[in-house]
Image (cartoon, rainbow, N blue to C red):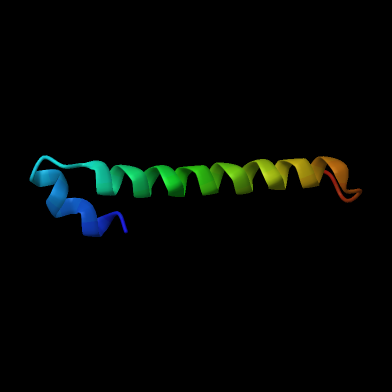
Length: 47
C-alpha cells in the first residue's frame, strides 16, 4: 500500500501513502495496547 503511493509522493500528492501509513500506525498501536491490557489482566508468569 505504502510503496504504491511512492510515485504520487514524487508528483506532490502524498495523501495515498500518508493515509495508508496512518492506518498501519493505528493498527500497530491498537494491537500493542491490546497486548499490554491483556498481559496486565491475565494471570501468568511475569518477568
